[in-house]
Every structure is written in C-alpha cells, then in structure tokens.
Length: 152
Ligand SMILES: [Zn+2]
Image (cartoon, rainbow, N blue to C red; front, top):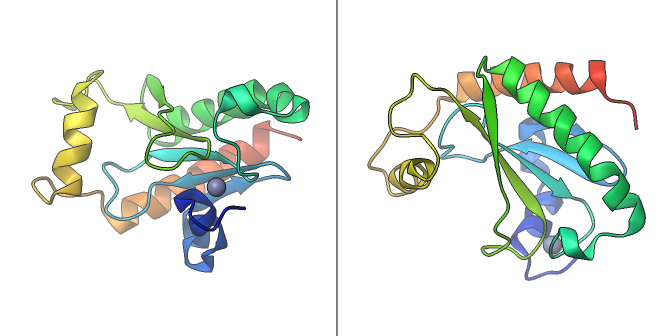
C-alpha cells in the first residue's frame, strides 16, 4: 500500500464495500464510484500496489487473463450488452485498475473513444450519472456471475 495512491485509499475505505462485486487474495472487482458514468462500469484492481501489468508478479500475471475474462463475461451478462471495453491508463493512480465498460450499441455517444467524452460529461455534471438502484443491481448480478463461474 502507498499512502498517496488513490486506489490504495479506496481499498482502505470501508464505505466502498457496497460497490465490490467480487474479490480474492489478489484482486478486487468493484463498480465505479458515484458519480458512475453508467451502470455496469466496473474496475478490476490488483490488491497489491502494482503500477501496471508490466510489473506483475508471476502469480498475478498467471491469474490476470482468467479473472479479466470472467469479469467481462459477468458484466456482459449482468447488463445485457454484447461487448465490454477494457481501458488501463494507470495515469490518475499508478496502481493497476482496469476500467471494464459495458458497450451498449443502442446507447448513442458511447462507441469507442466517445466513451471518454461521456465519462467527462458525467464527471462535470453535464450528463446524469447512473442511478444507485441500477448500480446495486449490476453489482449483485456481476457478483453472482463471478461466483458461479470463477474459482481461484
Ligand atoms: Zn496503490
């Protein structure tokens, strides 16, 4: 843990427990905090303070694809979308957190890089964030999906 790291800080905050869909010894799958750009926008974090996938230990590297694939399938099913985007910048916090973003083709303004504009519009209050009830439902469904398909 690093005190200046935003992701480590989130992990220390017990208030985020309602957003956690699944966790294991090395991973946390959590919904985006409020204001959330859309219901079903999750983040997959390493528990250890790791700057990027280039810095994984062997056990993290071995599990990453398994956990990522399971999380993407769980999100795809939970919010009924055909695909899930994955973005890892490591810029706002240099602690691995993969943004897992549901892609709903019927939602205009969310295709590919447009989703970054959507994100900023919610962040700056120009677009309505996801509703708490929709987030809670997504967390529950992703949690169920992870528990039924993944064993680590
Ligand atoms: Zn950290």
